[in-house]
Image 1 (cartoon, rainbow, N blue to C red):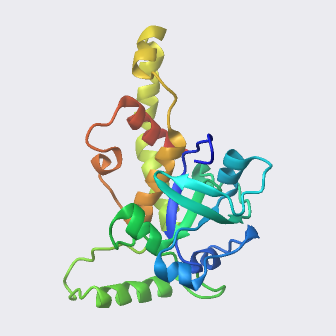
Image 2: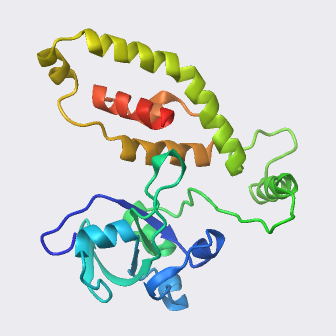
Length: 238
């Protein structure tokens, strides 16, 4: 929130290595200081979509926005990247220090995902194996114990989504045929508002980054609406 302007986005807790790993630069402003990262102080780096929707042509640096009830000074703006695979708007996010996110938003010390970049010429298969062995050691897992984490590279994520797409294509086609048979008033009762495909896509990618498989009930929640179900289907098929 900036003044009387609202924008729904994703808030992510990171350290400065996040931008190095993603090879992402700032368009203006600065990174988090070591003191801000250690203390969990609030400071925001805006994605370009958030900047554009909250500030338009105005310079957002040194302005203060609200993340829910939390005030956050804007210290930087990310260089625009546009859409990624699966239709995700990479610029629709806000970055804050990891410790600030854990303390003030999540309320726990969990880390949902760790991103790793690999130098050109280095085998991603070898790196993946090294990471798995390191995590098993750090999490004190025995040789026969099942891992309570997943290590995926982008090729695996794409393959997983492709496989899911093939499985659900027939189901979505059936849903489309059923909706086409309904008169307009009935269709409006089923779909009273637009599908939330972008939000559903972000949620699907979060789940895929954390695990190879997930249950639909985890993705949709306990009481999903028809809009929730169809939004998630379209998100996976995009």
